[in-house]
Image 1 (spheres, rainbow, N blue to C red):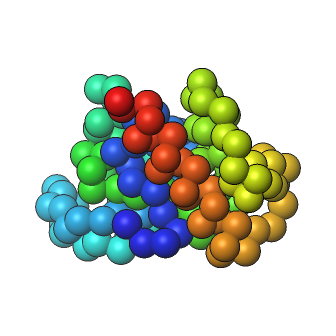
Image 2: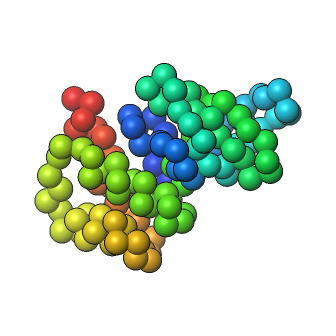
Length: 131
């Protein structure tokens, strides 16, 4: 996971139209898909474990969620992370994290530090939700 991504293994994080980054090499009928390629989620099944992704080169690929990260390098990915946080029944009390979530939900531009606050909130909440 890079600094501007969240792991696709967070339950419910990836949804239709989520921008993703392939994190592991994967074989596919149409050829080899190399880690680092970007795409968009078309659909998920089996409780978001299997994800159909449209890659930038036009190919589609069924991928396991552990091979994908939510791409936070654009507003769509940031918004999807904020939406996911809003759906959790957890209260965020850290001021910087709250500000980052508010900025994301408002569609405002965010610098890397603000995105990092959003990432931190998501990771903390994801860990809490598993316990």
